[in-house]
Image 1 (cartoon, one colour):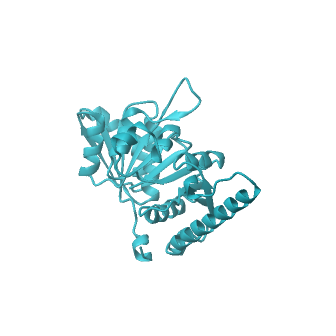
Image 2 (cartoon, rainbow, N blue to C red):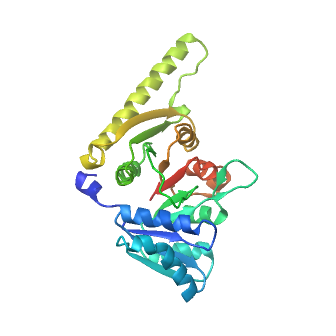
Image 3 (cartoon, helix red, strand yellow):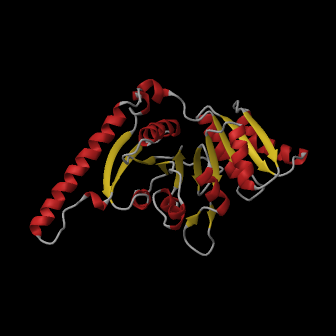
Length: 287
């Protein structure tokens, strides 16, 4: 991927499913701010019948952003929420779909509701999961992005720098998750421990070099004002980076979109499924 390709704006149209819930204003404000920052069009998707009362309500919420030249449209469509949001996203050529996460009342953690989970698995575009949407803009200072060896990673890292630059982030940490099976040495004494540590260091150096080669292709305008950190970690893919994002108090975690999941993948959570279960922070999944 060359610099010209990386300069292309990843998000031309932002979509968000809107319902008359307590979080409606916060969700609309978050989506509108992002549309202005990314210079994108905003599409509000409402599952239900159209009415003048609903339209006026949505327009009143959008008013502060319309005055800033926000380009928008509002789509009303009846049917199954998952089918409606996915079909409208395709029809309107949505590049980034925003979904609100739900707070589980009896536990001190966040989870994605069944509708948002289904949409995330099936969406053909990038998805942003917001765990705590806010009417007032909150800073996004630290972005964590996966750096695993995968054909999708180069685009994901490039998109992460685009997003971080637009949001005025101060730091990006690129996490290369290395599974323990890469270390073939069995540790049973000091000698084997030293050998295993040498293997680990070599793997870390190799992964860091690979990520640095990706960063070289990213336009300088997207990297010059951001502190860049490379962080190789050993552990289970998905779980490890989610845990790291939580410990590092990241404001946004950016991940590759999952590959098509099989029956067994649904039974045994892995990669993105760990993220969807725990939601350590706001999560952006790049398609």
